[in-house]
Image (tube, rainbow, N blue to C red):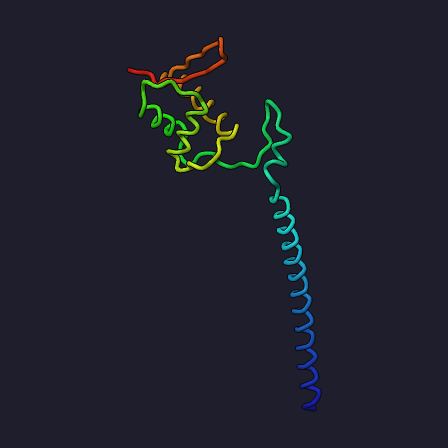
Length: 148
């Protein structure tokens, strides 16, 4: 009689372990699928910027988002231009000076830096902080701090 009670308890324990085994295998399958998904995400993120930028057009830039400047660009430009208020600046010169102030002195100036500086300068002109000088003969655009 005692043997039948032990057999029943052992069978119940076996059934419990079987259920736990099914749950663990289902969870393991879920974890493996998530690992595979994350590995695919790493592969997708491992694209070189040049591979993306080769498809840029005049009106649209394909790129992975990355901030070009650490600080606020208009504030950095104003600091640079206030330091030499009488000087006429070109976009390339401004970009180099802003990168130095932004603690990125060894960063090469890219066309994205130039576009960002140009857009910020347009905003500053609209606010009346900076004036724009265009030399049409040589197709040169220069910017100067507006004296108040």
